[in-house]
Length: 93
Image (tube, rainbow, N blue to C red; front, side, top):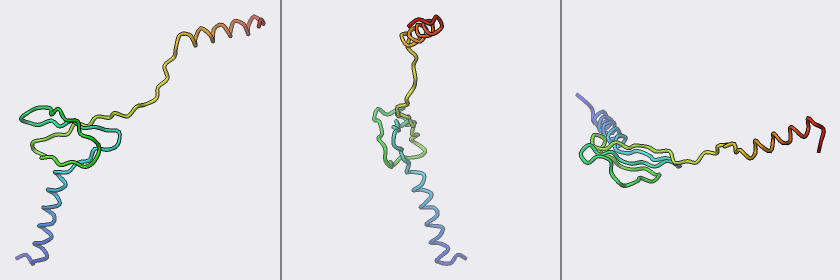
């Protein structure tokens, strides 16, 4: 037989598990779209913060929208470097 304290602990454990399964976070620099098992992908874009979902019905699809720097070489830079190399090897300026 459970004591009153045991019953409270079991109730809190089940309640905490349910809350944990219906809440999810969208982090900074990310957006979500929701896949609904009956309607497909919903048109709303979910912003960053904590959201509710029905775990057996909805699946969040997380998208990373942060920009990342990248280096793209250009043809004019390469031609300029080749011209400088020719000048330095021939001794002309």
